[in-house]
Image (cartoon, one colour):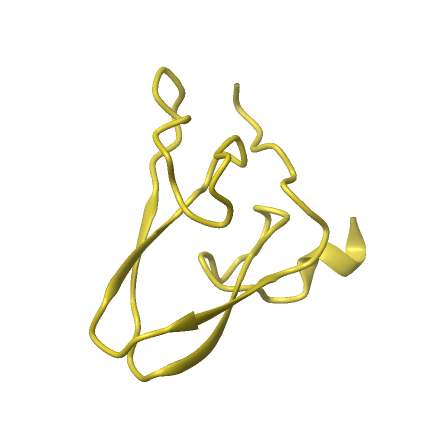
Length: 79
């Protein structure tokens, strides 16, 4: 598997807490989107650690093609 699975063609809006770590699924196979559940095992993918800078909503990439991963950069609108 060299290309990630597109989990959805829209970002995941998630309420995050300042200072807390989140592990974003880079492979697209996790059943716990947008976060890693270990489904990448046996692939070249690894989760991406995200530490929230402040409390509030973060928009995690769902298409797995963002150049600003783990956050959405709008790439899904071009797929």
